[in-house]
Structure formats: C-alpha cells, structure tokens
Image (cartoon, rainbow, N blue to C red; front, side):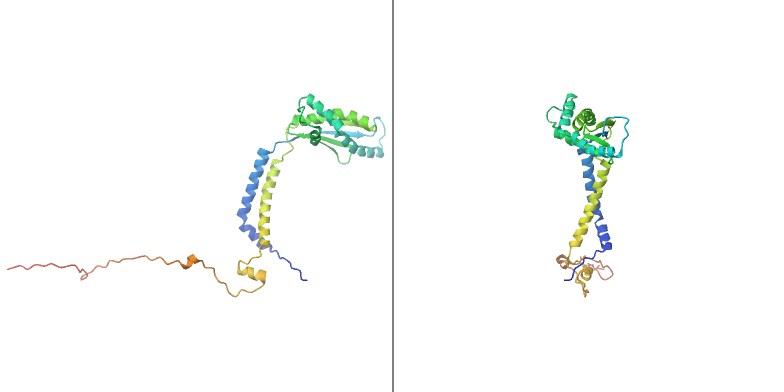
Length: 266
C-alpha cells in the first residue's frame, strides 16, 4: 500500500499569510482589546505576603549538626506543611482574624482560608516559605502573621522531634502579584495573531478544490491544454454605449427656405 505524503510549500504559506495579513492584524487587535479590558477593568489585583521558617530537628543549642540531622529536617518540612494547613491550626488563625475584624464571622470558612495559604520548601533545604494571597494586602499579611503565632507551639506539641524558628516576618505589600497586566496583554495579542494564522493555514491545507491551472498541475499532476474563461451572464447582455452626434452643415446653396421677390413697374 502506497503512502501518501502532503508537501508543504513554505513559500506558499508565506504568501498566504501576506494575503491574509489584514485579518490576522484584526484578530490580534480584537484579542488585545479584550485582554486589556479584562486585565485592567475586570480582574482585581491580588497581593501576597511571605514569611520564611527554618526547621530544626532538636531544640538544644550549641550542638554540632550532622548531615543526618539536616536530611531529617528536610523530611520534616513536608510534615510541617501538612500541620500548618490543618484545620486545627487554621481554625485558630480564623478566630484571630475575626477578633481583629479583618474577616466576617460568617461566610469565611476554614477551607477558604486554606485556599489562600501556601506552604512550600525552599530549594530542598530546611527552610520553608509560608505565603498568603488576598485582594486585601492587610488581610494577606495578617493571615501569615497569625499563622506564625499559632503554628510553632502546635508543631512542637504534635511532632515532638524538632522546632521551628521564624527567619523573616511578613510585610505589607503595595505591589500586586497578579494579574500581570503587560504579560497577559502581550499574550493576548500574540495568541490572537497565531490563532488567526493557524486557522488560515489549516483551512488552506484542507482545501482540495482546484481553482487555477497551477492547482491542476500541482494537485493532479496533469498538464493544462487550455483554459476556458468564466463569463457572467451580465457580460453577455452588455451593449456598447451609443452617443448620438449631430452635425450642423452650413454653406452656399444649402438654404432650402422659400425665396420672395418683387417686380418694379417702370
């Protein structure tokens, strides 16, 4: 069974895109306008507060730390992550935020608070980053601050194998982390242009109709003996314009008007 291959001519694709450049620019402009409206007027800015904690395997000070202890502390990071986002910890954080009147007593469940807090290890070290995001920068900072207040005592009481110390405290952020307006705008413009170009290319590749004698040669491999032009019915009924032209001819002997004469009696 012979396999059929589709040959793609890059020059033809380039010429196709040049012909459709107006539509491509139009699609890019429409997507750019839509992206601008969504990013600047629809999406609300989100602020993030960060803090870092370091995990130790024991509380004693002035003790030589071995590699085994460091590896054990790295493994504890994953355990502490689960504890920090547990309902026991977050319920106390929620109550503290309600006391500070930063969140309503009703309508702000623990699961909603959990979705706003992220705990991640930093580059496979003993350090873990605690982050919180919210549309209110003060609330984002307060969530991390209260978590740092509540979590250490619960971790020590629960794990009984190490300690947690705060490396950096959260700060009030004035610059939002999302949406990234300029990046999103560029992606919308570029995505609109690419989508339009892909649409025209795919449509052209899937089009198997023959439109010109060149298509006959390329798609069918046949030589063209003659071309019959397409004539519209309106062309057959068209008559040449006829303009009436009148010429005035004047000269001696050409006046056919009646002559009148008289005879004088002598």
